Image 1 (cartoon, rainbow, N blue to C red):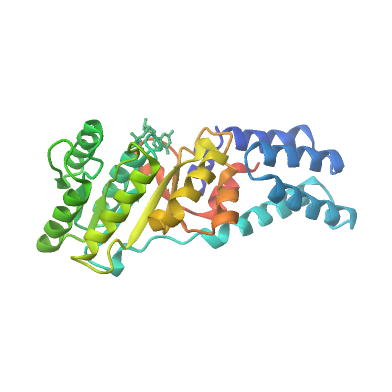
Image 2 (cartoon, protein in one colour):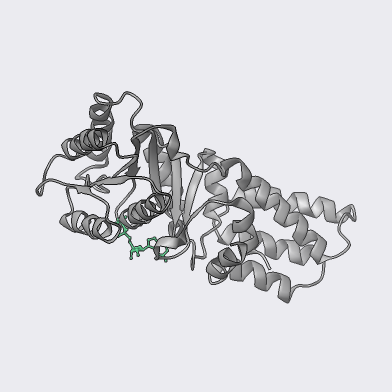
Length: 299
Ligand code: GDP
């Protein structure tokens, strides 16, 4: 499984930059550290985090802690893992039934695809799954969700166009409760006329759900596009408080030069990273594993 993370991540600009650095620069010296700092900053790890990390490694190098570049690489690996380890907290959907996941995020980040992949995962685990087509602003989103539902033989609750999102999700929760469904995954709009409108709607959805189940939603899962780097950070800042985000999915980490955003997210928010998207197929949504991720980036 570890090897497959590497296969998926090796094509990303971030992995290429880190790998080529140690090939081009096999010697342990200050130039190596300067270039490492550039690689980290370019990948959106964040300026402060990158400089802190590199200065720490530089001090250790000057104290002759590392015999060669290979030993520095090992120390770097351990530092990177320790930055991500605190947010490696898998989602346990067995703590409630139905366990309600409200997915939020801006259009285009991979939200619908992620819902489809999660439906597949939980179905494979033998759980009864239901989807709620709460993105009522985009007909295409409802259709896409229905396609995923048919493919995975999972019921999709929807209403006509321009239906009220809170009403669709309320109906779905009612249906999930009466049918004994174990996991309900609700989609929401990724854009309304104003950002305030979107946040009001998310608040309304959560409020209406609580009329049926005071603990719902059990997870507010925000889907973030890993290729957008620092933009992802400002999106999360907006959603965190108003939508009460409890967990993250970072998509499209295969192929991107901005994968360093994972470290910036971990550092700034400390929110659990539940899953990461390493490709477009159902099995490419992985439970986040800090070691596997870091090992996939480094030579
Ligand atoms: P939504 O608007 O947020 O619902 O976005 P979609 O689910 O329609 O996804 C937008 C595009 O991103 C689609 O072409 C997906 O196949 C693609 N996508 C989603 N997740 C990943 C991923 O992890 N890796 C790659 N390479 N593409 C992804």
